[in-house]
Amino acid sequence: MEYRLSPNTCTKTRALKNIFTLPQKFNLILKLSSVIFIFTGCGNDSGDSPKSPVINNIAPTISVSNVSAVETSEVTLSSTATDTDGTIQNYEWIQTSGDSVTLNNANTASATFTAPEITNDQILGFQITVTDDGGLTASADVTVSVIAFVAPTVSADNQSAEESSLVTLSATASDTDGSIQTYEWTQTSGDSVTLDDASSASASFTAPEVTEDQTLGFQITVTDNEGLTASTNTTVNITAKMLDVTIAGVVTDGPIANANVLLEVGEQSFTTQADENGAYSIDVSVDDSYIDSIVKATATGSEVNSIIKLVSYFGILSSILEGAGNDATLTSDELFNTNITNVSTAVAASLELAVDGEIFTLEALEAAQTNLDGNLILPFATAIKLVIDYASENPDLTLPDTVTDTFALLKDQDTITTYISYIEESYSEEYAAAQSLILEDDSLIDSSINESNVVDTYYFFVMSSSTSQGQQLVLNDDHTGKEIFYERSDTGSGETELTGS
Image: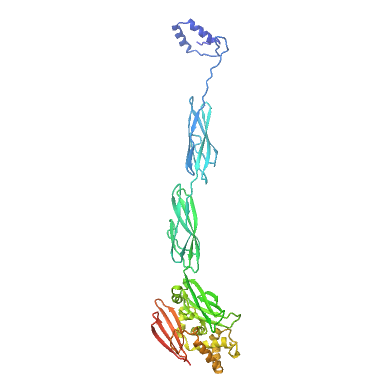
């Protein structure tokens, strides 16, 4: 049976309430349970039009929390959503600001992404929107503070070191948000060296041998546990081991005023000008690789194209330094050959004639000393004095046209032999007078030899592998002489008699 209630059902229902007894009401309810009620609206007792009932859907709610993370780390965006009168049907995460990232599981309550690599801290913005089964939505914003890794710091001081010494490169590194994982030293400039412990905070190497100061460049790079790096450059100034000495003497044949002085140590050269009395002083500074080099002095006249050229071999540098002593100054009191004279020039020429050439090595000097012809020295010195001091008054004594200067005169054996023979024969008085002046001049002759007949004495110090040896050449006024060989103790170990005409 179907009961269809009229628009006044509500009113009539209230009327039935007054008509039916309780049992009747119960039975009626049971019967009405199988009836399809079609409500077209119920009015009130006052006769208003009926209204349909309204059922309101309640929107979902959602909660989120802001997040902090370091760059390159995995970040999780979490949300909690509820719907009191239904269920959550959909989640949707989107990015709203900051460096773009790729969202994983963006349609779930929790999305993830990898924080971008950044150089400075950055804030990324996101929004989550949820939809319930009734189609209502709710949204919330989330911020993620991405913290940039802090790069490590490293420093290394510049330094200086002497050649051939052990040098240590030291770096100081720190990392405020982690730890230092690796060190790497590399060379960037200068003579190549081998770095030991190049993968540690302190590397080392042996400074190269140099002939002049040189700067080596290095770089240290450190890497922290996040893979960030820091580098810095440092320099090491390699200083050459220098041998320093001051040599002082006089350029004289009378003397030679304002002479130009050239001092040679191997291929290194130093110059100065003597004063009006011929006195000179010259500072020498050379690399220690020149320790066994020959030291030679040459003095020339101050005039352009001067015919004056005087020479003196001092020996090897090691002897010079030893003779200079603690004050590092060598004078004629310590080595008479610092006086550059007609006699020293005669000896120099005789040495070069003995080996047929200029002397550059210790071996050549030793050979020259062994083969030296002492008979030539006094006549050679006399010839120079005649050319320099006498020729202005006697043209026959001038320098022969075939040579350019006084040293070249002595080196040209034919010319000097002819010149001396001519003077001894034609100008014997002048020749004898010149010799006498040489013998009487303490700046030309070493007066430390207290023998009345000694004309001159010369010392040549040479270094062997283990001992220091010397040679003393003594010339007498009768044209005789001797060579004395001795150890550093100055005890003679042998003599060779010289004779002359």
